[in-house]
Length: 469
Ligand code: ASP
Ligand code: MG
Image (cartoon, rainbow, N blue to C red; front, side, top):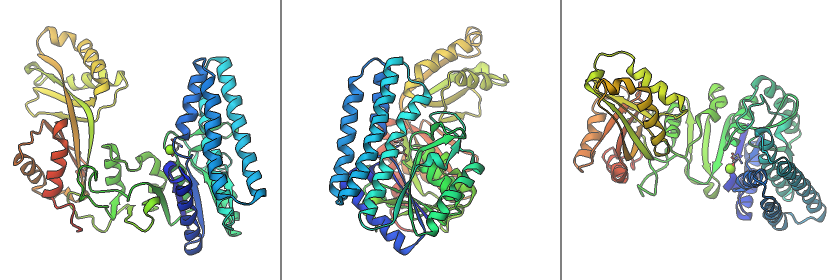
């Protein structure tokens, strides 16, 4: 059994819809049974959220405009792909009804002048409530026995609106009870991604980009053979092809490598969203809707090519390196703890930490946006140490980036770090700080932002990542 999940761009236009219909028909014919999970049409979730926010801020025009824009956006697909008059009337009726709900919700938000997380979920869930019936109708128009399924019937969550946590046992029961009989009859279910409901039936969402999560939950519950994430890139690449034109698609990755890449900014799957698949050991494949026969990446527990040392490079830009420095810190316990509890109190996440063995400084990397807050918080928390000169300076270095070098085979292979520093040194690229995770699946470097492109190109070339191993 296959689960095929389509992201927003995959259902973002008539041409894209057409591709998805072809892909699903092909899968239904060659690898049945098949379950589809779809995101909202691209841009729709943002439009819904912005309109609701404007309504809360006492502005009603945006939601009126959005209603019309959404109607047009979806009706274009209906007009192009659904020829039959009856079928057209039916889907148009569903779209109308959803848009009426949208207007009603926005009017209440406008009247109350308040947008609660629960209200926002009710609004932002509407994109998938439209795209799934639309995709099902487009499939039916090609005589494929498809049927839309509203995931609020089958995925049960707690009431953490905006990022609800699935109750997996309960969901599994409902998913199987609903989908298995459909599959038995040869029906192709088209399930709304992203959305769910509490036990009491209140609408929730799984967090932005949550359709991957929906697909993984459904895949795990049905013991699927593979969860396919159809997107607009050729799988996971060795590096960003805009920086390295000869970058290539990685045929296989481990779950851990994929998680490291995602953490350091690669447009891969969010680790949390694929957890249900990982726990059930279900492979995940990343494919390109717009290049269906092209290269793909399979993400599994233990890839065949697990001995490759460096596999992929990714960078996060727009960062600041914060340094707490002072000779008085040597041997004084508890400074690091106080530094990081001050940071935690500001709810700022730290991307990387490094401490020199001389203990004269602690450095860590945060987003540029948080830099000011952090410096202030640290100066407050460490006032006494600053007064007594245990700490000499607390300062930020701006315009840095983290370059993460990922590959499970780096573990226990000597000379990798040397290879990296040679590649950088011979091109006079200065490394500001370095950290290696204890998993040894990644080495991360802090570099001046302006050096990132060159650094990625040099390391890519030095480790011959363009060559198929
Ligand atoms: N439509 C939702 C979003 O834009 C979920 C998804 O695309 O996965 O966040
Ligand atoms: Mg989306």
